[in-house]
Length: 170
Image (cartoon, one colour):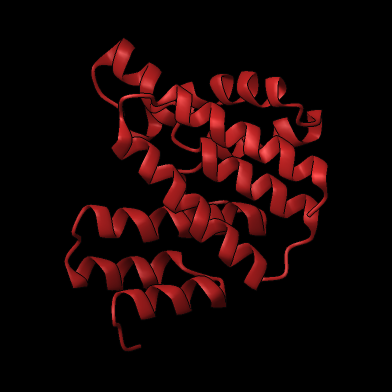
């Protein structure tokens, strides 16, 4: 990865830590989603541009939670999708992302709880990484994990990680 992409991603990471200051569980969540997204993206052989977009989206995917809770007292997936893109765009522009990068990440933030119409590897991997973390954090029962595995996971790398992490047999 080029120094510029590393720089802007590190800026975004730090901005997100500051954004969720005092809320370590949210910081831990996006850090874990990023870690899985980064690994899956690398295992799937994404090119540098798509990898950068994926990693940026993983950092900011839940950025809409904060305004949703402030405005509505709840943070359901659709509220996150509605309120997140604007926040993500501001933060990404501050860190020096290009306009096409900002646009794509904004799209991903605005759709990361929509599981139909997944249009590219960055979107698919973001959804898989978020599920890997959510299934664990929510202590989901094995039946739910298996259902999500069958319905959501498409990449070979994401499938392998899911099977291994939850000691699943196919």
